[in-house]
Image (cartoon, rainbow, N blue to C red):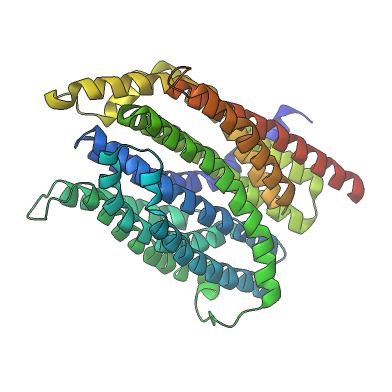
Length: 458
């Protein structure tokens, strides 16, 4: 095949992916806004938000990972024009997301005392706990939103979740401004104000997405008039069989980034704040790759429903190519602006915290070098993972992600991240090792499976 056989898919892939990217960026943008606004209060407050969010991100990864099972099943049912099957998938998926949201909230709420056992700075832990209480509650509407979003994506309606996320971000910025700093007569609540902003915006986000889907001809019949508690055991089992491994895949990856936050905390509050800055910036570029990963899920799921495996492979490779091009652009940006980007997060006019802020920016600028290098492997691994989910292949990729992140990546982070070795930079070298291993092994898996499907279909 020629290059144009792949590049001709770029336009449609981008049309599907762009709204998903913006929606995914929306989740990260909530954290970005929280970090920038809280960063004005001091490095201890920024480190506290980082520590609190590390617990939430683990729970969120399980919820979002589980919900991805809905998309390829809906995409397959959509390609088959099977409304009843699609409605059943959506109803059961939404039910499981709701139950999971409540369980994850309880899990985070109960896990709070672990902060004291993790040798984190006491000042940081005491600030983090009241923040975490409220952000943990926001997991419930967030995971319910994911149920609606993954269903909408499966129908190739990727704009509606984007609109809901944009509204949520606007509300989050407004409430942050009012409640963190106590503007226009509102109480000055510090980082707890940021948590209230997140909770309110996520509740509105769910409601608005439902309104949008109810008003759309293609999705209206799915989201109204269904009996929520009349359930089919076989459909629940199918979603659990797909969703549980998908949840673990995301858990293993987010888990190693969370471990990086905790390992940074062992080095002190400034390395932890610097780690949060670099992590937040690289998370935003990762969400672009996540958008393309969802596109891979949708389009591979569609082609699987049509049993057109040759085009399935061609379309998947076109998405991989587009993702690598974008990742290369982000890598260049991180290299060129590694000194400037971290300065967005701290207040250089704050004479009291000037020494701390200068140290944080210095560490973060070095970490952006590592972040620049792993843009390619981070993008490729999540793109191939999306394509494998579209094929409904989840068990072997789960084993691959575990080996890559926890048998290879984490030991490197642990050994090289000690203060007397490479410190914060060593922690990020471990992340690079894990992501690169995952990208290579997952690509080998996808290449093998698609060749096998094409041969068996001839």
